[in-house]
Amino acid sequence: DGGITQSPKYLFRKEGQNVTLSCEQNLNHDAMYWYRQDPGQGLRLIYYSQIVNDFQKGDIAEGYSVSREKKESFPLTVTSAQKNPTAFYLCASSIVAGGYSYEQYFGPGTRLTVT
Amino acid sequence: AQKITQTQPGMFVQEKEAVTLDCTYDTSDQSYGLFWYKQPSSGEMIFLIYQGSYDQQNATEGRYSLNFQKARKSANLVISASQLGDSAMYFCAMRGGSQGNLIFGKGTKLSVKP
Image (cartoon, rainbow over all chains, first blue to last red):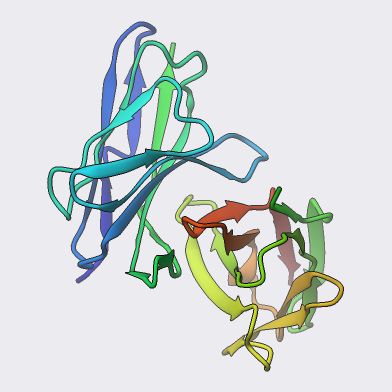
């Protein structure tokens, strides 16, 4: 089945540690995205990538880093510089045509808790 | 600046009745797209329906329809014949700007009563 996988579903880390969240898609989509969701809030864009080896900062990129070495994979690292890392992280992908992304399909999310 | 506003934090509807979830948007772009997503308690975001700014007709997908009023900058989601499984958070989103990324509203929590 085609889709987006994120692992793990729940992740616990101590403050000061970097942590990497996995995102893999087999939809052959060009674009991939990382969002953060806090309780009672909508999604905020962290990073996105429209092609391999290229990515752009979103609205809240500080304290995060990404890589896009393969079309299928877009891992997100939450660094110790991120002041409030505890949140729900969602990865998405979409087709890109004419420079615009179409509907985004989401993975199941990773709930990160940092204490 | 582009913005999505969902003014209803929570809504209740009786099973089998229709419900309208409000969404207004603000953009200076001529070409944009509007999306609705459903987020059950499991957390995954499920794409429901899409409306392009140049589409002449309102979008429909099964029990979902989008009431698009361009002059009012509104894109309300209508769910007909509500089911218990429709209980979830619903997010309106807009695609716009040069990169075509999505901007999300804060969501509406829909509860369907038996």
